[in-house]
Length: 424
Image (cartoon, rainbow, N blue to C red; front, side, top):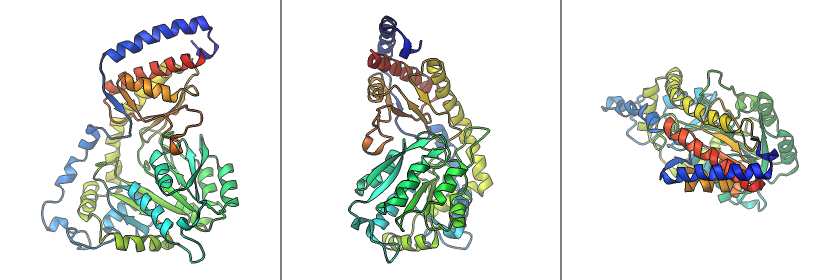
């Protein structure tokens, strides 16, 4: 039944049936959580032998003889730089390897630009009272949280099937010097799962911002997180920016948070020499060096980039059936009922679902009452303000396939119930 074209009587009858089904789910007393893109225990188990890779003093020395138990090497050990250079497609000399959190590195980067000036003829961002940041939506809630924390006005730009609307972005940044940057998750974007097209990447690289210190925060969190045999490919933003004379514009971030251990991985960033020298001034005072033991463990565990890719095949084997479960359930329930639309990504950690307008909050609340916890409605927009109240982020990774199947059954019932009530 297509609810948009059904009679009132048919909708009332359908609602009665759905309410009965929903009450049966509630009576089960379930506790299923799909609120965040957490790796499952089985995924974490894949990296347990990493902890056994260093068991002597000699084993704790890096290739150049650095004792990783001691101070030093502010920007990380070389073998770990090499690993991230391969992930990001950049020169290892331009890589800074930090702690366990790329989000922390992004926060510190914004903080550095807030308190210092990368050029002599610009002001620190703190001194720009009407500072703004571009936020493609739907997007990553924690990105928005960082710029919200620092008092930026966050300008939303819609995501298309090939990336953010570049017509809007080009116009905005060329006309307003108070716009200081843009958030990007360019491959398997959070939450839509789309990958920026070559054209979009080239248009980013060729931006002509009014602000000399405009920066592209390129969070390539899912660079190697494929779940399909036909994975997406992403053009290298660093190469394209160098071609266009905008080498200082991108700052690229990556981590092993969803590759090894989410709470004990390794994070890294790429920046041009100008940006890196600027950022290192901050890090020089913030730390004597990050956890080189953890860096070395990761480098030894993977061996090289080929070893890393083989490891990701194991993740793919665990994740692909879960994404298939989500997509199959959505197809079964909404293929002929256009009250919902969704993405079908080739990788990453999320599926984005647009439900009937003005019902997302209701759907999330109904799911919660039935024992299924989802990311809060609106979280994929700055200040949790989805103007159409329709986007919901599904995170399939943590539950088992059986739990996920049941959670999606409940989700679909809730979407139908909320839609019928809104239409009526």
